Image 1 (cartoon, rainbow, N blue to C red):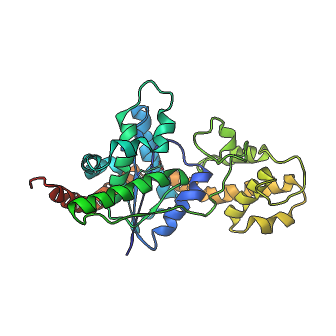
Image 2 (image 1 turned 90 degrees about the vertical axis):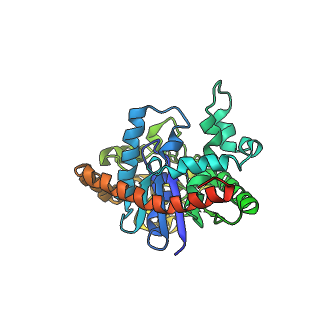
Length: 325
Ligand code: TRP
């Protein structure tokens, strides 16, 4: 079975854009791949984050992933820092990656721009990410568009290592999921729904309560015309609502458009459908919160299983590089 690996930073609450654009695909992949999914808490340390907040969000992220459908009997869900091989491999690969190539990463340039102090961890972030991927010999790596450059770097590092030290790593391929990849901000439908937005009224969270979801959709920015047409370029607001309704009801937005004469009924149906889609997820989180012992058992078992794969690769890499065993 081919291996898939992906990671999520525990830096914010999961929203609809994340769910439809990424995590739904994680859930689907667990049935056809040997799937490894990790909550990358070490990566979160590359930027300012309160220790208590990090701990809470790490657990909440794992919980939410289980609630959206990751099944511990089908995939390996673990916390990055629970598998020490990640940090260790990261040092080895930081001696393969170059200063120049890390400096060309656009995420680093964007996040460090104009800052007085920049953490070394922000600079070496992509090396840790490469370690996450290469430790598991993953062939397929689902990522968002913004992470494609890091995947290219991972491939370069892996090929350079293999050339210099012998074949140790599988060369991974990025996979950018298409499903609902176009969930836009409700207040600014020309921008992607994103946790970095400073206005939460444009974002629907997966665990948000129904009355709040209803309010946000009711207040969603539409277009100056009042007819319902699917055309993301000229009618971004109404098209985004159709997109959401489509994702929640498994139908095509262009087929839904002719069924509506005005925005009011479209918004009503969209909020009903979104609430219905998220209802079971919220319920599962509540159940899991009542049984945190079970969640801890799941991630402990995940770490153990992950470590078996990771340690085998780490040993081969150390041996290839000339470390005494
Ligand atoms: N950098 C990724 C992001 O911000 C998260 C991540 C860390 C990741 N390690 C990974 C994604 C390995 C895929 C594979 O989205």
